[in-house]
Picture 1 (cartoon, one colour):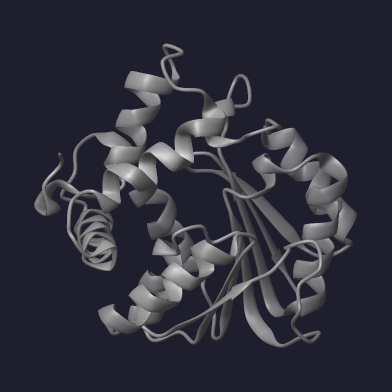
Picture 2 (picture 1 turned 90 degrees about the horizontal axis):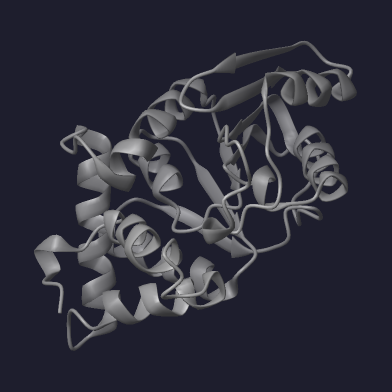
Length: 232
């Protein structure tokens, strides 16, 4: 059993490398196995999740890790935080580590994830961590928010999980809801990583193509993956 002090998001990477990649665990069973390992660390599952959140946020925000999943994510979140303006909405937030970072920096944050349990977990942990995030279960292709209701819309490592048509729908929703800026970040992979549920790969040319579809001024850059920033 993993102790509370060792619980953080590096656990996901370890499971992916040691069990999923060699075929011991199927990608479909990955999420259930991950949840089982985390919640086994304490009698109260929420205490285990709280330790998981605190340890992961500490690793991401202090850059204390030199390897592992947290080290891979940290520079992505750092760049995203530097692009945030005003009120923020994050689509496909998963555990919501970026949203929690932005909340701690003083932004008013709404975080959406397709999975109700994930959104509910983020809502509980947000309260216990003292980092207010409005977490909602919602589909990023049909965002239940008013037009021009937030300054910055984020989709960080979301579009690689979606087929092209759905990705275009997400981008259209981001442009509808945003007042000032839309930020898309994607990993660059030779092939979509099925372990993480990726179904699509991107390169700089793909991001330029996406940017041109918006009809707005945009920039594309490479920084631990690819970035599309559309200013409205």
